[in-house]
Image 1 (cartoon, rainbow, N blue to C red):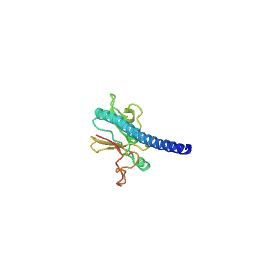
Image 2: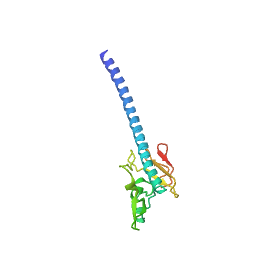
Image 3: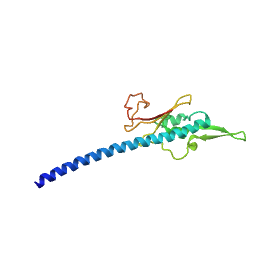
Image 4: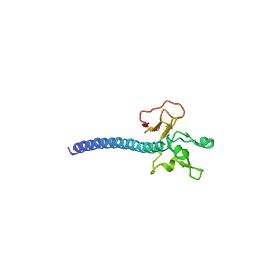
Length: 159
């Protein structure tokens, strides 16, 4: 009788443990999605401040050497952090450059919770942009190769 009772208790404990582990994985993914949404919202605020100040959204303009060395320039936030700037006139008649990196308040992450860069695509008129994370599977339809891939888990912030 004791062995049967012990077996039943062990079975119940293992089922409960499996439920708790499954729930913790779900909670962990939910936390990552919320974190990505929060970080994208912070980026939106910085992008909006830039547009209010200069009348357009920032746009990175890498050189040919940068294009050859980067995997996908112009499609991630590190590109605008590195290349986006505006020329400001000085009272002396000369001008100076103000970079988007120096304009951003705080330390915003340009890598999503899954280790991939956030994607930032600004239209040619610089009046609208798309900002998103590729999500848990790190794949998106906009991957530079024109491949149709899963986009159901992407985290978007469009303006």
